[in-house]
Length: 227
Image (cartoon, rainbow, N blue to C red; front, side, top):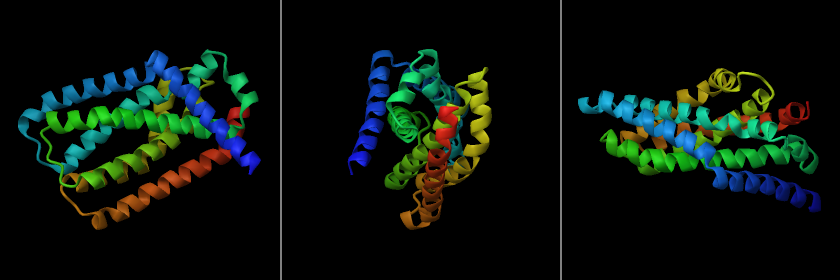
């Protein structure tokens, strides 16, 4: 029990450290929010005037914005540790699993903060009538967890490589493709007013994806982090 409590407290400490660092610099949130808002404005100017009614198309546009915005900020999860020369201290102070879960919690928080900004703007600027808000929010939450899990472990891999930003996007997309293929129609169903029972197959896939990614990442992270 003591060991488990210590492990949880170390993960919480990593999360708190990243959160306080972000509050001081606001680098990641500013990067993803600026990219998302710029992309959203460009999309709304391009297609908003035509009155897009296809909910699947609107869902695809939403996830394109969220995906590429996440790529612009989540890549620095471990890069700043390497650049700030704090990676060694982090290795000595916490177990790899605690580091991963702390970073994962921070990335989920970052994505949820991004969605709090983007979703209302998307609804207003694209003139979207959301048919089922609870289903949409559930899809966004599960999608954020899965996206963060995959992005966190990929960020650890590319943090020691050159051309980090480009490599991060290239490695992330194949891993995240199943998530996007599921989240887009699920979001389209929610926008179109589909019921929770109709969306359950999609939710089940998103839950399974997040569970598999978190489990696989925890198993592999020690080898990645200690290398």
